[in-house]
Image (cartoon, rainbow, N blue to C red; front, side, top):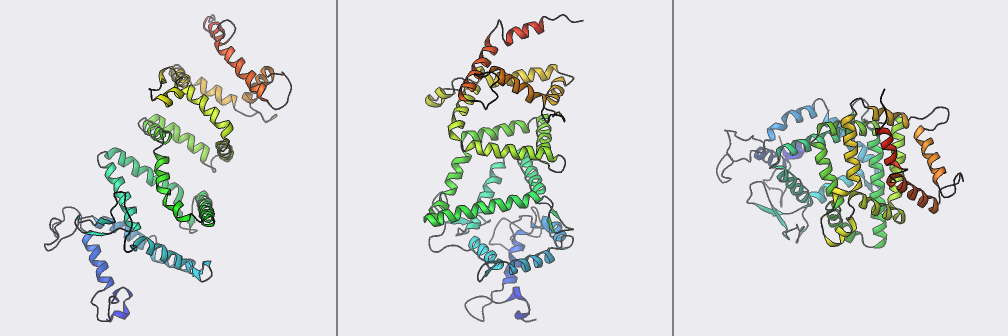
Length: 417
């Protein structure tokens, strides 16, 4: 057999007599990482001694590779992908294969002479033997980041297992394929990717036109780091971690998200969720309205929130109205062994087929019209209306003689049959 008959076995090097073979190097690289830990046919102690291998357990992927080759028909799929990329014209003279090849080359090719700088200022990284230094590429930066995540989980195997399970479930939910039609089962994943790609293209075009594309791209990592280290984000992570520790909370939250986000099981709920998210994103752009609301929310969580932010003193969470409401709901749930509260809330938000409104909407409309600055006006609420509503709500909640306290006393003093 000649080398021209085997594409992977072609000689590469400075001259036609070079003894370097791509296929041989490929197999040798696989062998270095194929044995499992404890393999008695190789050793992973001394790279300078015979039969050295890294014992990275590549053999564990044999079943997956066999499935990909046989059941998943990977070679056929790659052939179809190559045909689709070849037929795709990104711009005149450049097809999809060219773009993919250049992308892979950009990931794997080091930039001479300075290379990429890591956080510590170095431009090299170590291979799996821990001794050999090579020039850092984009792929090494990505792999080092993934390795850093594995190292962070090294001392917490339980959290690592949940992370792997959640990551796998997310991939299955979004990117599971339908082999009978060669497409994603979740069509929303396709539309989401299209929106994200369009957004990325628009941002790149904007910064290219402004002449700061490279500076903008170089600053993405620092801005992302600032975002995920924000107290709001870290607090949300702690909240999710606390929910994960409570199986009942996990089941309840999963059921809620499934109800709101599953278009097949409940299209009305999905449409309402989508509309609410659009309203929320629009609200996030309205700083004039959002900032005062956040100030009020901060006071609700901790009465001294602004002062604590300015001086660094501890937050007074014990006297926050938000915590009091949560404690009240917990007490109600503890006493409500027949789920009467849940039934009441469900009935309140159930739409009346005749009017298209729920009882909660009717009650809310009546209370707004009666307690606004000009009762019964029937016009959109003004600033004076909002002020009057808040003042009267405060009076109702705090008036012991005529407000909520009096109503609770009447209920508690009732005579049972």
